Length: 294
Ligand code: SF4
Ligand code: F3S
Ligand code: FES
Image 1 (cartoon, protein in one colour):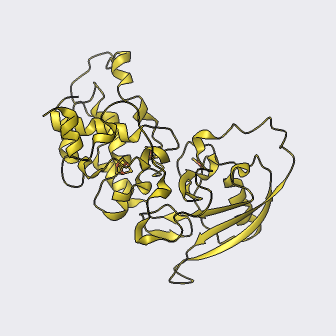
Image 2 (image 1 turned 90 degrees about the vertical axis):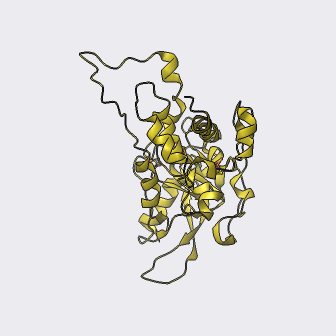
Image 3 (image 1 turned 45 degrees about the vertical axis):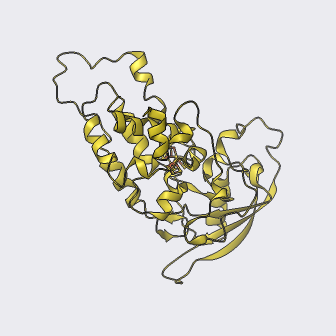
């Protein structure tokens, strides 16, 4: 049987070669059949298509933006509820700025995570108009006059937009995301050709935002699936010619919670704010597991 045939038999046919395709997250219902999954203008919050802020004639003007935010506070109520806030912001502000405006001037109890505000730390992934994105990478003008904001799916909500990331990081840690090589390199660094470095370049870009894993319907439905982000970070070391633990990682990924749970849905690739070809990386790991070829 050829490699492509075997991969198709394991749900891997869609990206067995070539570039990733994509499927919008909103086309698949979230866990528990949430009524919120298709709300809002789909596609308006794709951070990879946004123009750079600054230098715009819109700077200095202001617009009203109504934020519909899914709230949850176990100390206040057993069930989540919706709140709406209208703020005045500049079109070139980021959605994160608008959330700050709410928190600092309307309701200080609103809970969210953020740190860098520049798309680097990965802490402000949320569901924006039904799609996962980083709030600091979405401009107000892309979503005004109204936007719906929810916590990412598939992880337990602790409060408002904050979820329990521990299951996500547990999968990441299981991949041993560090270089393993006990051989003494001698008095020089471990050398690598540009071609060998290129092999895993794409997967070095991950910022662990969880946008991919929490957009995956398999992860929503099966808490055991290790998820695309863990596989991306395994890929980064499996295909690193300086690393000696590829077989150990592939062993872990070949079990029932590993790569073959992926049904090539492409939501992960669509959601990644770093533009990583997540599904392609998963396909490459599937091939490595099946054909013992790096
Ligand atoms: Fe985020 Fe992309 Fe890394 Fe997934 S692969 S955690 S979406 S940066
Ligand atoms: Fe899930 Fe991505 Fe596979 S969305 S099913 S991990 S292609
Ligand atoms: Fe750091 Fe958005 S706040 S990525």
